[in-house]
Length: 121
Image 1 (cartoon, rainbow, N blue to C red):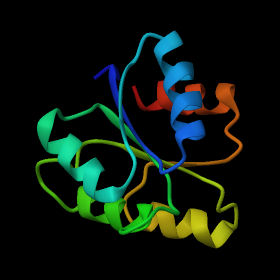
Image 2: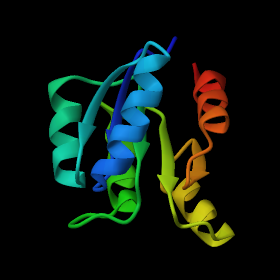
Image 3: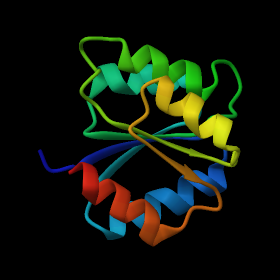
Image 4: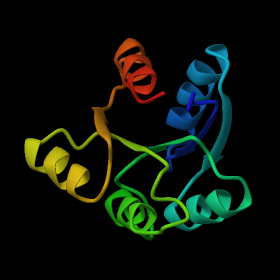
């Protein structure tokens, strides 16, 4: 199924603007959330085809939100790409264990991110 709708979850307005701009220029419909709680609300309102998930956020962190999404039968088919400044191999492994399909470190390389999205689509 081609990816059209993307939910970006990040508590950094700069990061949200950068990723939104990047994806909209590629023709994606983008919605954003600034924390895990908001992300789960957006998910229920309009199910996206892909979620880009930051890890370090107030409240639930991205690992916890990803785990909740990947274990929910309604949303477990929505791929999550962790998009975070946490660049240790252990973080990447942990993210994948929580249900993420891929892992990108910040600062995000536009081409790398787009090729990972295309690989899922």
